[in-house]
Image (cartoon, rainbow, N blue to C red):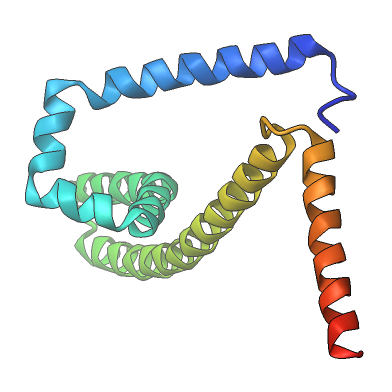
Length: 160
C-alpha cells in the first residue's frame, strides 16, 4: 500500500511528523509544564491517561449545560428580587435535577468516547507503523515463508 503512494506523500508525512515532534518537544521542555509534571498531581495524571482523557471530555461537554444552569439561576435570582420567591425555588430545583441527569449522561458518554478514542489511537498507530515500516515488504514475506518452511519440516520429522 505504501508503494502505491507517490514519494511526496511519505515525504510530507515525515515532515509533518518532524514538525509535530518539535512542537511536542518544545511543549514538554516548557518550565511550567516540567514543574507541573513533577508535582503529585502531574505524576498521577501521567500514570492515568485514560482517566485524564475521560475527565477532559466530561468537562468540555458539560460546560454548556452548566452555563445554562448558571444563567437560569441568575435570571431566577433577579426574578426573586422582584418578588417571585416560590417560583425561584421551584425553577432552581427542577433545573438542578435536570442538570444532574444531564451531567450523569455526559459522564457515561465521555467515558465511552474516551474509550473509543483510545482504541482508535491504538489501531491507527499500529496500522501506521505497519504501513510505513522501514522494511521492504519482500523481507516480511521472506521471513513468513521461512517460518512456514520450518514448521513444515518439523511436522514432516514428527511424521504428521
